[in-house]
Image 1: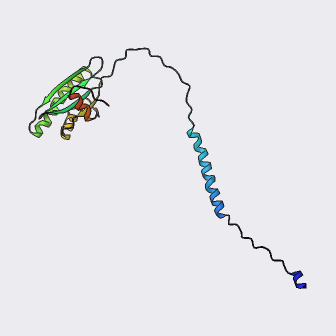
Image 2: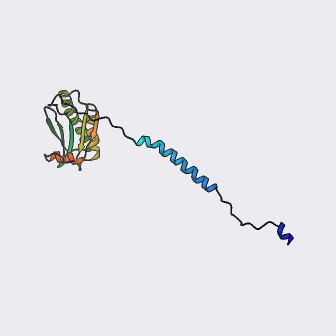
Length: 174
């Protein structure tokens, strides 16, 4: 009995809590919280107060917007140069089929003549939109570009649908 007085009473066995995964999770959460608060400022959008603008000149001259289009017309190619502005105009020439190298040179020569006469009327214009029909060979399009680039160096390609529509005498629908 005496022994029982001096022995330690049995305590419950308590498992120690492993806090390493909890600390890892808190570290990650704190990192994302800090990062998200710094991005909050970038999502705010401050707009200036609205204002109205007055137009001083109601009659503004429309842009020239020149286009050179090439479509297949039977065995020949039809090259058309169209422009707008206050004096819209159009030039059309046919290039006959022949040997492949002759066709290339004829396209270049015809295009150079057309663009040079256009450049004499509008010397400040340097941009042209260019399109070829669906049945036009890629080499013919390259020849067209070669003929245009000296006179009008800024070339923008447009869809073949517009070239086809213009060849039928109507405007393309976007």
